[in-house]
Length: 257
Ligand code: DGL
Image 1 (tube, protein in one colour):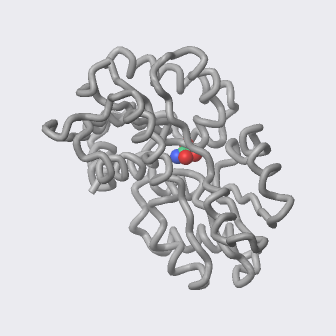
Image 2: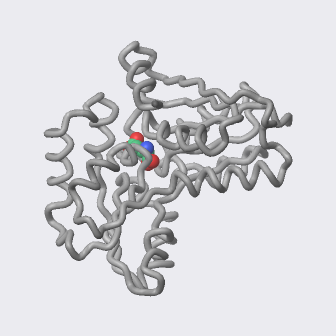
């Protein structure tokens, strides 16, 4: 596969644009085709089998476009489908999982108290259970589903402070936030809330996401395969979505800035 081929990036909807933005920044010569499945969002409250089926259809679509690699910019679709997708396709498929390791490592050996905010599906699946097994012996981990934070983005209400803060209070008021070392944004939609979380959380609480780590991982894989785009190639991003409305197109564009 030529190094000039595009990279396919997908999510249940608009959340993965936060990952595509990081990809643009870190690998500016790559051509990115983004697919948001907003017509079927949210994935996080669906049965895993359904999410797997939707993910396979998107990857099949990317294969028709001759992509050289795929980023599943969705923790939920990764939980439900990454193993089966990798077994089925031979191109590199990079998935995502809540950046719990990053959060625990910030403690430099000191036990950490961490809230992982993600979708219900991500928090229920085996992949996350394995992650918890690795880190819960030495740290205290709380799992917090936040489905409204996905809906708010998809409905175009991210700039509505009242709606956002109502949701943050709903999900996080039950915690003694002063005692929390880190909050992991374990869903790509939540990364758009970083500034809100900064305002909402105590100053000492870290806000951690896996976007940069995911793109570093992709870079390494492409490097190893000699498939990084040449510096002479002009990078680009094409935003596509299963919801063809103008509203969705504009929303996607505004989040990509
Ligand atoms: N953005 C997604 C994730 O990273 C899922 C959101 C959803 O559709 O529920 O998990």
